[in-house]
Length: 456
Image: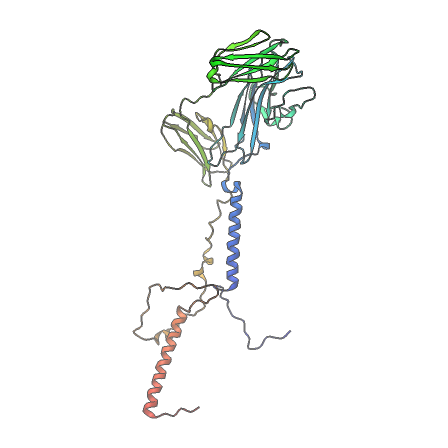
C-alpha cells in the first residue's frame, strides 16, 4: 500500500474526554450496570441472601398416635424458599377390621401446610399439630404428605404408599421419628366390633358448630332424622355401605341435638369445646427477623393486651441472648453478627419464632455502589492537553492583571459541540495577543514619526 507522507506524524497523546469512543464506553458501562441491577432484582436469593430450603430437600421430625388421632411434625432446616409449600394431612377412616381391609370411608381429616415467609419477613411456625376424631370401633389413621385424600379406600383405589410419613421412599422418608415415637405414622386397629347398623359420630368445632357424620353399615338405605334447639330439623338418607354423610348443626342450634334411625336413638348431646381449640385470650405478639450483610436481627413487639413473654436466641457459636418483652413493649431486638455458618435457634414463648434460622452472606455485600470507581477513573485525574504557561509568557502579561480564584460559570453543551477553550491555554493566547498589540502600536507610532515606507 501507499507509504505515509513524510510530513505526516501521529499525535503523541489522544484526549478521550469528549470523543465518540469515550461516549460509547460510558453508554456501554451504564447499560452493563443497569443489567446487573435487573439481575439482582430478579433473583430473590441475590436480593435477600436468605438461607432457605426447597420442599424436596426439607427435613422433618414427626410424632404420631393412631389410637388418639393425633400427629405433629417439625421442619428442621427451614424456612422454605419463596414459592415453596408443603401440605400434610391426618385422616381417619371407618374400617371393617382391626387389620387393613376395605372398604374404608373417611371419618375426619385435618390438612395444614408449611409455607415460605411473606414479603414482610414474618416467620411461619416450624411445627404443625393435627388432631382428628377416631371411630369407636375399627379404624385406620394415616399421616401423609400432600392434601390429596383417598375416599373411599377400596380394593381398586389408589394407595398412599410412600406419601405416608415415615415411609422408606420420598416424600415419606424426609421425616424421621422423634425419640420414643413410631417410625411409621399410620395405624390400623380399634377396640370394638363395628355393628352392622347405622351410627353417628359427633365432631364439635371450635366455632360452636357440631359436625355430625352419619354412617350406614347396614345392608339397605337408611334415613337419619336430626333435631336440635331453635327448630332445627333435617332428614338425610344414607345408602348401604356408602361413605359417611356430614351434616352441620350451627352454633345457634347446637344444644339438645338428637339423631335417630330405624326408630332408634343413635345420639343425644350438646356442643362441647374441643381440647385442641386455640382461642386467643390475649393479644398475639409480633415477631420477625431480617437477614442482611451485617448479620441476623430478630425483632419482637408485644401488644398492649398481651402477656409478658420470654424468648431465647441461641447461636451455634457465641453467647445466647434472651429477650423478655412486657405488654406494650415494641421493637425489642437481638442481633447476631454475620459469620460463616451462623445458625440461631429460637426457643421460649414465641410460637412463631421457634425453630432455626440460618444466615448466609449476601452475594452483593462486597460490591461498591454504581458510580464509585478508582481515583484514575475520575475526570479530574485526566491529563490536560494545554501546557502551562512559561514564566516569560506570564511576565509579558499586563502588570495590573490579577488571577481570580472564583469558579467560572459554564454553559452545558451537547455531545456534538466542543467545549469553549478555557484554562492555561486561553491565558497564553490572551498574553500573546497583548504582546502583538503592543508591537503593532509601536510600529504605527514609528511610521508616523519617521515616514517609514513598507514595501513587500
